[in-house]
Length: 172
Image 1 (spheres, one colour):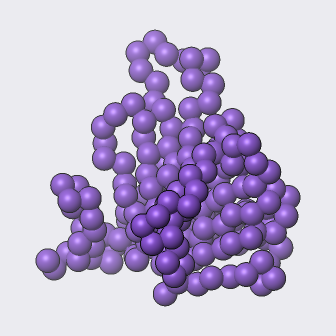
Image 2 (cartoon, one colour):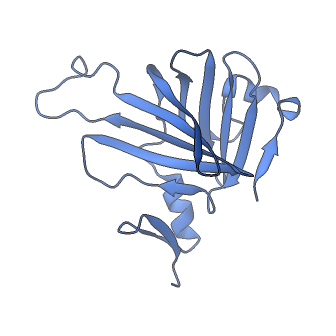
Image 3 (cartoon, rainbow, N blue to C red):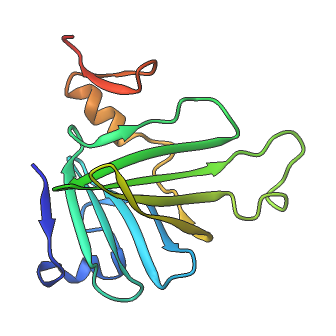
């Protein structure tokens, strides 16, 4: 079940692309070079994508049950720890990525003052319409450390196939 909510129907809690009541930040950021904000919020059963002007109501809000949300967990390798979620609205697809660069050895926060990153790729069918990058100074990757999407999917009987990069029904 996909739900598209127009700006007119948004509650005051969604202003500035903030999380709806009962949901926590998966990721949020201000888009580089723009006065717009992007957020993905997670609740016990739903994920919400929101995009709109900084300080104003969201232009677009999409919600998806966690069990059917397209989700790619971090593969466990590399300097960057990242995750990706995708929301669809008819022929449009909004693929949101978020993560942070890990520090190694003697590196300190001074070596990585802006470790967080993210963005969204907007597609219509298979054509890329926009690739928006988060301003690293204004990015929050709040979900890492607990994994509510993974937990919801596995509780629903789904299994992550890391070789194929897809979620499968546990009975397959």
